[in-house]
Amino acid sequence: MRLLRIEYRNIKLFDKDFVIDFTANDKVVNTEQVYKVSNNISLQKVISIAGINATGKTLALRLIDFVAKLINDNTALKNEKIEFSLFKENSKIIVDFLSDKILYRLISTIGLKKVDEKGLSPIKSFYFKNEIIYSKDISSVKRKKDIAFWDDSQIIIERNKLNKNELGLLNDNHSILITITKNRSFNFVPFIDSTNINSLVKGMDYSSIFTNLFDDSIYTIDYKENDKINVKFKNEEKIYEINNFDEQYRLLSSGTIKGTLLLDLISGILKFGGYVVIDEIEVHLNKTLVEFIIDLFMDENINKKGAALIFTTHYLEILDSINRKDAIYVSTRDDNHNVIIDRFSNKIKRNDVKKSEILLSNYFGNTAPSYALAQKVKKVLFEEME
Image 1 (cartoon, one colour):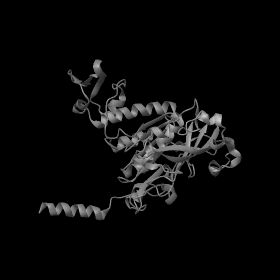
Image 2 (cartoon, rainbow, N blue to C red):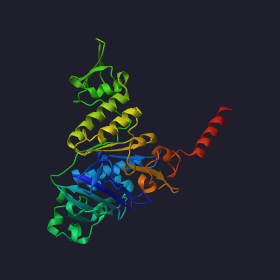
Image 3 (tube, rainbow, N blue to C red):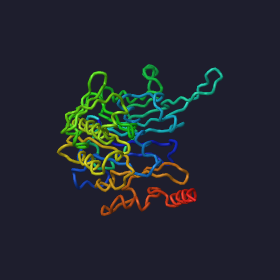
Image 4 (spheres, rainbow, N blue to C red):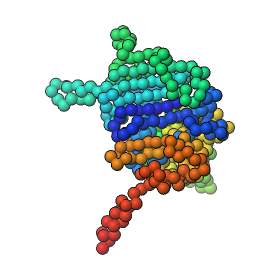
């Protein structure tokens, strides 16, 4: 299974619709940069969401993660935190995906119930108000724009038209998508909540070359009984013992721990296909190493399964290593503090410009720190020094 497009409509914090398109909309000149699933559908191998702090980048990853759980795990609305902060009456989730040469579109409309429990404050509860699933054969896509074309003749299931017996098999907070995705799934590894908290993971082989890429002085890292960890460095006879979480950082850098874990996760995704989602990819990692990770997904001799890397970054110079404009999204906030996530290629048509320079110039608005606010901070600090 492969994701083609994710869209959310009528959700809080977003003035406009939230859309992440996994297909290549710009002209495909270099096929190494994309993964072709048909003559007319090519998928991005790398997608980046860039912007300054507090512009909704992590939120965007959580929205993608929610859809992955909806498809893979048939997650119930009540089990997720995201709907309480974003969903409201008539919020919509629209997902296009590919499975076994068949294209599907899911349109889910969310409803909100307020349950009064014995005179106490009403409890909010979300449910699927209606859902529609469309399908068509991949061979029907003769042009790129055909991917987004759907009509009523392609409807295969509509929730509100199911009979009582069929509806009785579903809770109202579970999607009917399970009728399509049962026994089907895709590999999805979210690295969202571990941005600043990195820890050695039991069972990983830390004596591999993965670890040495980030710290060449390490000879072995071994887990022992009672979760104790032994670390041995090259050219040293002594073996260091780590007994608790905090002691890891006495011997190993955060970058070494994070980088080794990432490469281990990425190697599995590259081997079998799927998605790795990383929040703030540059945290604890050298820029060259980040570019190395991006290049792994771009290398068609390594990424033979069309695996995809999705990441956020504050480090705009990283974007210059991504050749495709349509693989980059820019997160900003408007004057009312609503989140706006726009595709770079929607505003910039030229290919001969440095993406980092465009964003640092504030062309999109709010993609560079406010000069005026920075000066106010300096003024406050200056006055405190007097």
